[in-house]
Each structure stands twice: as structure tokens, then as C-alpha cells.
Image (cartoon, rainbow, N blue to C red; front, side, top):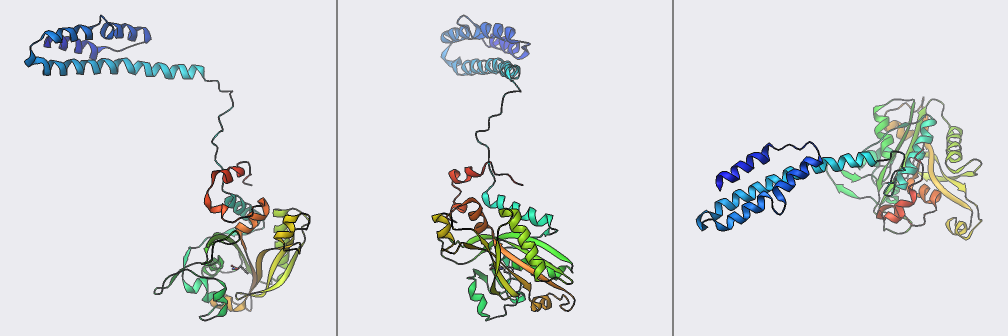
Length: 340
Ligand code: PHE
């Protein structure tokens, strides 16, 4: 019996199928009702009990080898069929197409507008030190303006904190580069604020900075007007409202005229029709001193805005928390938005 199994095993191992017809013949010879395997199994019943274990193993191993020989060419055949049946003119199956996050879409739009206006992209670390986030930005220790930004402190020494705004990137860039400077820097910022529909402890800002000879407030106004035209459409009215930031002097907040056409307009503009979109101003000479740029020769402007705020306006989203929940029903709505 052992010799017989060996003989079949050799035959099976040597078998190479050229096509489906041959494989079928092979399968019938070994696996059909009157085939080799069944013949062996019926002989198996008659053999001595002491041999059963060993012979059983041999038959099983032969069966596995036969199966593997039969399966391989079938796989090939299946693929062949597929190729033959593929119609390359059929539309693709787009069911599960992904989408960019709305914040990414808006960030890309803003970056691209400023890129065309001559600004370069710069980024900085999210874990900052006191110097870059506060002191160099004209907020020395105990400055009351530090209270405006509820800070997440990480360590006292060496001091580490989560940056509360992207203005820290200005400092890093000015420390290592000399004017003319024109940069735009997007990034995540963190503030220890209660989470609500309007505010979150994590959000995104985008910062702009330009330093050169003879830069004045009218340059800033021109750039902001051009930016608003491109993002919100031509002829949007804007206004500069006097404000305060420690690192700019004079400082302003920029409002755009949103209108009072609907109930929602009235609600989001608090009945005024105007909406605040960013902070800006002329870089305070103290800041230039801190980064060793000659304030008698150079001047500049800076501006900063919240990306969530802009995205909420553009897409009429009324709850900031939607951005971070990753609810697929929310994200799916941005599938068709172009990237720019
Ligand atoms: N950093 C300011 C903020 O977070 C925004 C700003 C940037 C204001 C640049 C003026 C100039 O509120």
C-alpha cells in the first residue's frame, strides 16, 4: 500500500496543467467517485490497525497535494476571465471617494491667495517657549495681555507651553532672516477655553507678516482688501476697527460687511451686519528690537485670523465642534469642494 501511495504521489507532483481540460482530467482521475483517492480509502479500511496511523497520514498528504494542484490553475483561469471581461470604458466605482477636511480646504485657499501676493509658507513648533509666544511679542512677564490668552503650560524649566497663537512663528522667522520678509504661516493653536459651539481649546490660525523699508498701513489695507476680494468675492465692504494687540501698534480688527438679509445674518452679526474676521496692525518697534531688526530702517505689518471662523462663514457651519468630531456625514459634504 505504501508503494502504491508513493507512486501516485510522484505522479501528482509531476503533474503540470496546461489548461482547464487537463486539470479536469486530473481531477476526475484522482478525486471522482471511482478515482484514486476513494480507491485508497477503501483499501485503507482493510489494512492492519497498527499501520492505520501512518498510512492515514500518507493518504491525507497525497490528498492535500492533489488539491493544491487543482486549485492553482483555477486561480489563473479566474484572472484570465476577469481580464477578458473587463470593459475599460465603464465608469469607475466612486462610491467611497474621500474628501479633504473643510479646514484643509480653507487653509489651502488662504495660502494660495497669499502665495500669489508674494508670501512664502513658513511653519513653527506647536510646543513653544515663553520668549517666542509672549516676551518677544512685547508681552513681558506680568503683562496683563497674557491673561487674554488662557495658556496651557507644560513645564516651568526649561519653560514649555502650547502656543496660543501663530504669532510665535513671526519671531522665529525674524530671528533667523533679515528683511525683506513676506511670510504666511498656518498652524494649530491651543487655549484653555471651555468648549462650546463658538470656541474650542484647539483651533487653527493663519498668520501673515511683511517687513521691508517704507511699509505702511496702506500696504496692509491693500493686501487685506485683495485677500477678502479673492476669498469672499469682489466688492465685499471691509472696515478697520481700532483695537489692541501688544505686538502691533497701531492695531485693528478687520470686519467684513455680511449683510442683514436673513434671520441667520442678524444672529451671527449681532444685528450689525458686520463680522470680525481678523486682527492686524503695524509691527511694534519693540518687537523689531527683540529680534534685532533695525527699527529705524524697517517697518512692517502683521495679521492673524482663525481658520475655523473663516470656514464657518464660507460654508455656513454653525458649530465649531463639527470640525473635530469627524462625523462622516459632515465630512462627506465637502467631497466636491475644489482644492484650488
Ligand atoms: N495673534 C493674534 C491673536 O491670536 C492675532 C494677530 C496676529 C493680531 C497678527 C495682530 C497681528 O489674537
